[in-house]
Image (cartoon, rainbow, N blue to C red):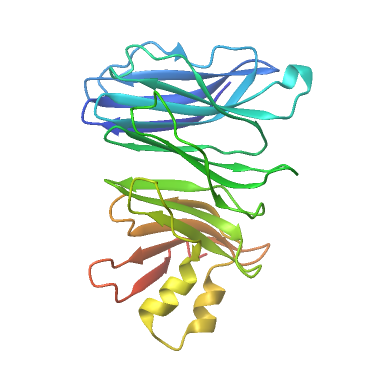
Length: 273
C-alpha cells in the first residue's frame, strides 16, 4: 500500500518520496529520483528502514541537496509519542547521511520542510499537555547541525502549517484559532534566515489594512474554519486553502497579494459550488 507522495524539483533533478505499508504495524519512507527530466527513475530505496511506523513525509531540494523529513511512531508497542526524523543528501540522492532525530515526544506533528542555499528549515506542531505549540528549527550547513528550537506560537489549537522560503525570507502560515479566539489564517515572517520572527498576524487583518475600505465585517467573514493551507515561495503572493463556510459547504479560496505596491489583496472562490 503506497500513499501520500511528495515531490521536489531542482535544476539537478526530480525527487519523490512516499509512505509504503510493509505490514500492519510498519510504514517505511521510500525515495526515488530522476536525473533526466523524468524519462527514467531510480529503483526506490528505503530511507526510514526501521521497525516503527513512518509517515507524514515531506521533501525539499536545492541544487544537488535533497532533504527528507517524517514522523516515527512505535505502534507495535502502543507508544503514541512521535519522533520527527530528518535525512539529507548532498549528491542528488545517490547516498544519504544517517537519520537525525529532530524532536521526540510529539503528537500530531505534521512536520514541514523547506530549503534555500545551505539553509534547511523545519516547522512542526506539538500537541501534548507539557509543551504545545508551533515550533521551528533551522540548519545553516545543509542539515549537518541544527540551531536551538524556536517556539512560534503558544496556542495548541491550530491546523497543519506550511513553510515558504525565498532567499533570506521565511513565511510560516497556518489556519485555526490563535488571536482573540477567532478562526483565521495566521502567519509569522522572518527576514534574517529564521534568526527572528514577527509576532503572529492574521491574513484578514492584513487585507483590511491594505484595502483601507469599509468591508471589515465582510472580509472577516470570508475566512472561516480554514484547513489545508498552501503558500507559494514566489514573493509569498499566492495562498490557497479549504474554507468551511458550513457543514454542507466547503470551497477552495485563493488569495492574491500585490506585494509591489501593497495596495490590495484579492480573494477568489475557485470551486464556487
